[in-house]
Image 1 (tube, rainbow, N blue to C red):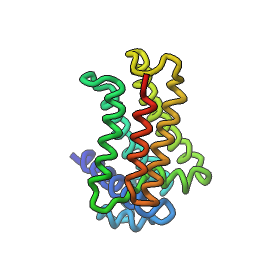
Image 2 (image 1 turned 180 degrees about the vertical axis):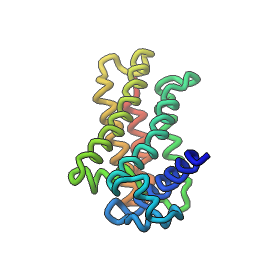
Image 3 (image 1 turned 60 degrees about the vertical axis):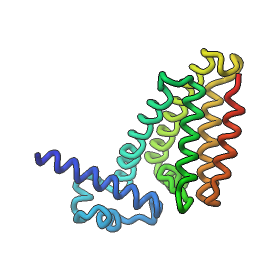
Image 4 (image 1 turned 90 degrees about the vertical axis):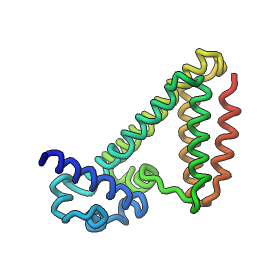
Length: 197
C-alpha cells in the first residue's frame, strides 16, 4: 500500500509539475510552484527527484511515453489503410485544436528543447530521442503505405517521415505564436498531397 501511495505522489508531482513547466517554461517554473500545484511539501520533490533537471527528464518520459504509445497504436490500426491512419490521426489533432474556445498551444517538449537543449545535454538528448521515436513510428507506417501501393515506390520513407514530423512541430510553433489554426489546415492539406502514390 505504501509503495502505491509513493508512486501516486510521484506521478502527481510529475503530472502537475509538467503542466506548470509547460505553461511557464523550464526557467519560469520553480520547485516551489511545482509542489504547490501538486499540493505536496517541498521535501517530497527532492525525495523523488535529485534536481529540477532530473524532474524534467522524468516528466518528459511520463508525458511522452503514453503519447508515443497512442501514436504507435493509431498508426497500426488494422481497420484502416496506412494512408488513412496517418491522415486520420493528424486530422483528429487539427480538429482538437479547432474546437478549443481559446486557441492556444503549449508544448512541453517544444519549450524544453528551446530553453534547455544547449544548456542540458541530458535533456537535449532525451528530447531528440522522443522526436526520433515519433519519426520512426511514422516511417514504419509510411513503409506499409509504400508496400500497399499507396505511396510511390521511389519515395524515401525515412526522409519523408523526418520532414512530416518537423513540419508538424513547425506548425505547432506557428499555432502558439498566432493562435490561428489555419497553419494546421495548411499542414493537413500539404500532407494529403505528400501521401499520394
